[in-house]
Image (cartoon, rainbow, N blue to C red; front, side, top):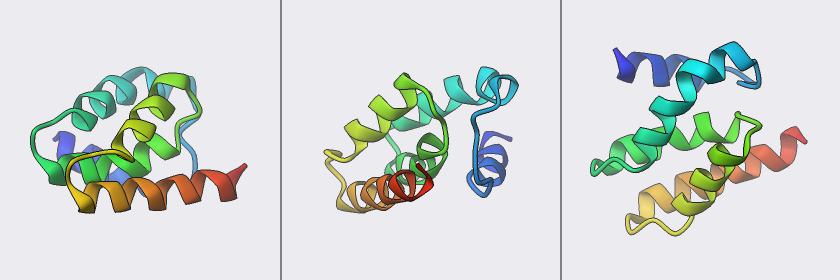
Length: 85
């Protein structure tokens, strides 16, 4: 279920709605620390679309992830944040 939710929310242009963040943020933060690199990679775009400090901190941390695919995804997602602002 979480996998499907991350996929759906990762496609939305913005996740700034407080009601969405209330449920999605804890899951996104959990995924950003997951041992599975694929989960960390997939959550970067969700984090980038949330305008809150903890999501941006998690995205910034993923820029230094041990997995190069995760780092590249975080870098790409950061580029999206810059375009959206």
